[in-house]
Image (cartoon, rainbow, N blue to C red; front, side):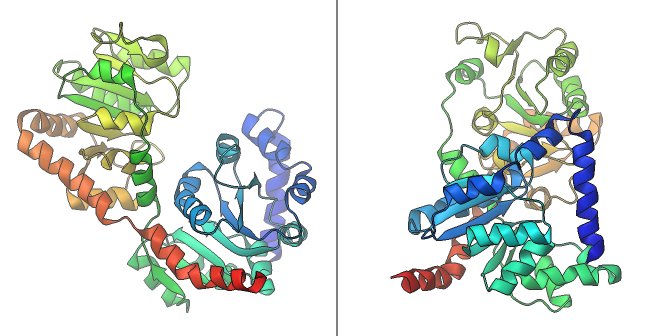
Length: 419
């Protein structure tokens, strides 16, 4: 696997080259400095470590239900949480659910050996797409039970191509795969990997947790008032906003809450330009006294979206006119129809929502207007769509419990060995 290791070297060189001008690359480099010393200080020789690795923030949300259930049922273990990306680590470095939170050292043979000698994990979980060749081979060599959680596979991935067979050996290092769907199980079976269980996606469990822990937002409640026509757009980009705001320019019966993906003054100014003729309030610049008579509320801060969805009747999730849609489950769990753009084909939860008739793809002004007109005029259709969205989420919960039941014998074996 010389080409894999050489590729990692080139990747690190590239990161170092751009770091002086790129804040995220700079964090990637700075966060890994003196990492091994900090880990040695944090881990005692008697600690029993369960290691959970995620790439970034989205994968953290998938791993989080497992972390929190392990803390509840097996407090005798310490949880080590590692991130690859600054966009995950910098947001969750103070997360209280794990005992140790750090960046993952780059996957060289030397780093992997040093890391595993320091940590000595009794078990490891890699969430979704994490297939680090050297770490996984050394874990396998050491006999550490290693699990892939919420993983999903497609025919075009390198593992299933003739030229990817050598790298594909990394999959044999896992003790078991807990995959999202039957297609993934069949693909793994096609290359001789049968230690697979279809459990679903732990994100469904996570959105139920988020719903239970929602924030009370008095300002949003005051904005909504007694209106039963509230449209919430979450994680929207400019192409999304141009689409739905053209419709609402001539439909004053709807109140709008917009939580854009990018909160920069330049982007907020673009939204305001599209909202000419509307009275607009910004969340951070408003009070419960001033927001009531606004037509549009812009959520110009982070951390509120999952609670904001609670106040809507119809949701729109952005990103579908760009690289791909954001989290549709955060909206669907509240029991409302969810709209999104056409780039959703590789997002299983969006495809599932469409099949359940609780999610709707919109690709142009005419399609959006037709759908919104029906929601406006046909209350039965709106409520039926909302119910189907909620039922879709509820039906697919339970992946966390299935994973932990499967690994329970291994957890208990280590407990008995230490007693």
